[in-house]
Length: 487
Image 1 (cartoon, rainbow, N blue to C red):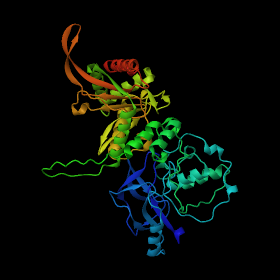
Image 2 (cartoon, helix red, strand yellow):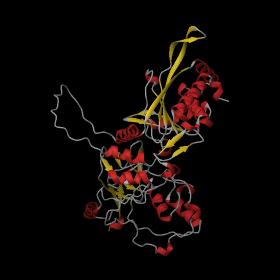
Image 3 (cartoon, rainbow, N blue to C red):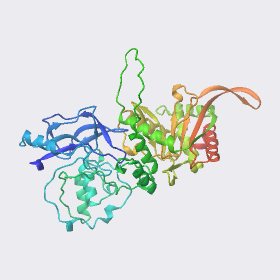
């Protein structure tokens, strides 16, 4: 009977994910669902993703309740046909591997299905799909769970498949059509539940030698680590971030102080855990140093007013000018436009600007890609869209993962100046304070100007002080004479 029972299990959306918190179920026990129907929203470290049905069936059991956190591969619910008895359902649940034993497929969701027991012979495995096998990392390509799993079995890179499924995702039909068109043979599948644990084998995970050695020393499984290194590899900083998140403070035998009045304790969210681990790792591994500069904004404010007056549909902000100015300065001083994985420096031709956006329980850094090639109106429109969707937890992973430089602006809160922590693997982050009227001396005379304070935090392993100073000088020039970055 087990071939008619389908598990709903916690997917693994990217290497950084190790667990997910149940948010909202879209179905209830007894509902009939079809393939790719929405089942349950799961909150990961940064966004809310939706688990969709890999098979058709009736929802016979819901095991994970809203607010609960489950490891990847954990059983969330059960789909089955109406003729399956309740005893068979309970037997299936009892025999299903626990969270710690569940199979983890690298960089792929784990919406497992128990399929036909007929398996194609080994000699039928595809050998003529070379044209579909090559390409960059496809972990962020939208795809259904079944399509992603089959892509791994066929050795197909999802970047080479045109998605026609819901929300533009690659579906099972898209994958099989591409395989057939390339002359390949469709094969059967066998996802019956394994009898022994395979989740501990991280030998196939791409990682730098230093990262692999450090993971062994710290007892970290590379499957648990995010991937931010060069060429899609786990780097030293990724291992250190995971180790920091798994650390527990030792118990202290101190007498608790009396509590006066009411108080409330809350379990830390997945997002806060990720923020804590990444920033702790950044401070521990990257030697931060800071350079500070003030820039006058009166010319910029006048230019902004002209733009917004001419086009009333456009509301370009000071922050949009700062994004454009940073992108222009990064092109002029490319030594700051870098990522560092602990072993290799990656230099970028274009400026992909991450902008910190405050959301519930933390912050997220959506990316304005190739900001150096975009105009102010385009940057303004894109930033508003990204910021809105970030606050609704509806960003795609590729829209907030990566970036070559980061901006954190607290000026809207009246903060004059602050220091920001580098967002690894980036090499620098700019902290932006509030623009305010200050007394300045011009040509020996005292006058008033609108001044903004800027502080650049840099990783001294890869960015020298003179380089940071040059970048800030160029940035100041673009902000004080904004026309020079609009040509």
